[in-house]
Image (cartoon, rainbow, N blue to C red; front, side, top):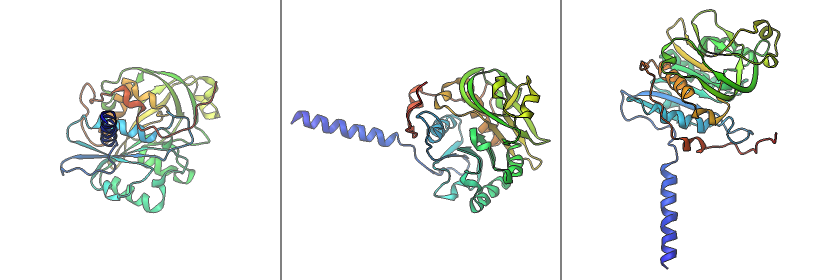
Length: 295
């Protein structure tokens, strides 16, 4: 009987811990003064575990944002919130999901919601593939983010990169070099004004698959940038984000957390915003279940 009671207690404790470890979705702040940053994760994909882990990624980013006083991150999963009121008075909206026109927020009714938030001052952050907009929405990406992945000129590729070329900007405060196994989108189509390149990489020659990108060799390519629109809006984009394990890199976390805060109109500390991470959290909330391919 004692053994059975002990086992029941352990099961109860495990269930309680699992409950408290479950991220709370679409939770509104209790303070009107809180800076709301909405993090939107795309739906799970047919990818190996650890790749394109959109939800697990935004949970980590939310935990880091909470380390800055006065910031209230709001988690949204599967591409769009159930309660659109989360966008009311948003300081910034972060997209971490697939692109090529599959973005849920490009649907007409949803697009109006985002446009309304942007018109009221919400900044925008694009991570990884969602900077690839369909051809008929290219102008929207240029207006919102100052850059877009365009099939006729842009490239994508996966390789191990040493990232150590950073421009001076509030977003790069405290950012240190990092090495990542990354899937990059590069050689973007950029707006004529308002864009500040922040992060540059040197792609292997074989990754330059378009005539335009080959002409740019051996010049570095911009994979992270800040944008200030003529209307005063702010945006940050970073085309990495393929591997969940990359969030374990100090320099990368610093860059993206700074970028989210800057886009929300907040001052980035001189040494960068806090972004502590428990390495064990990298393996939590993973959703993709495909086994990795054998090399």
